[in-house]
Image (cartoon, rainbow, N blue to C red):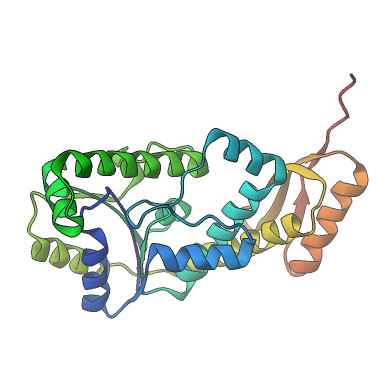
Length: 273
């Protein structure tokens, strides 16, 4: 009973490895593209990745600014968080892409894997797949790795290839694929989700649903954050008016009637010209 998430360097063979692992375990396999569609359906934000091998679609500085001004970034992140949390609650799933494991850092029944491979191996793989010359293949891989790094830095503020972000970093250029599968199967089958972690996931699902609802209702709160302190649901952010603050709390109490709510949203006075 576990969740395995994969992030990867471009053309490292991760999708094939993840599919085989899901088959071995009898788990559901969720591709990056399936997760992309789920996020689009929840958020309405169209952000189709540019290639099959990136974690997600990176944005230009102008696009990032536009998303932050319109609130599209917050809607996208909230929808991605909700989609990943719902999959984790369902359990027995293998997820590829979007840095999904970064939403589940405190979960002990989640295995967050990053797959890397020597540049020469990845170039050879891409040349065989697309018939590219070596220089073109190398340039494409460098571009795709850069896009993945920018995507995860924009969403999570992390260095994608920092090994401390993952539970396992596997160099498939030095490890036999069958041995990697055997290791992951054994590791995964030893994990058991306890009641405390199951409760944490349910609280994360509630907070992500509420965050999405507040964004959809266009509540006038900047830097909105919804989370739990123990069993208490905590609202944080900056509101322009008391009415905005109270409206956010009213929505929270409606969606979570059985939960204690603490409203830490502050009133931000308007700046003078």
